[in-house]
Length: 83
Image (cartoon, rainbow, N blue to C red):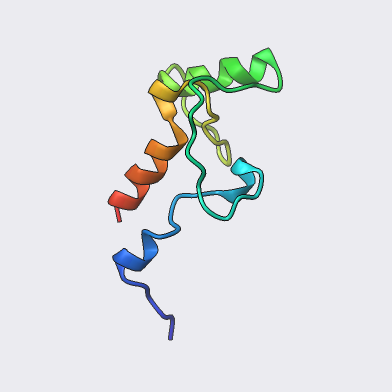
């Protein structure tokens, strides 16, 4: 039988990916407004997804581009509140 956690417990860690934050166990507070891309093509792809110019492909993730569009702390909060 699978043990199910209550939403209050799930909210403590849901939506955070440590690999996106240098392995930090808890989400840091992101003060940056802009983020770095590996290539210009990668940045272009992130903006296309964010603005709905194209659909997300399988296994593709929305990258961080600008904090007014997708702030990491806001994304984590939104995912936790959806629980």
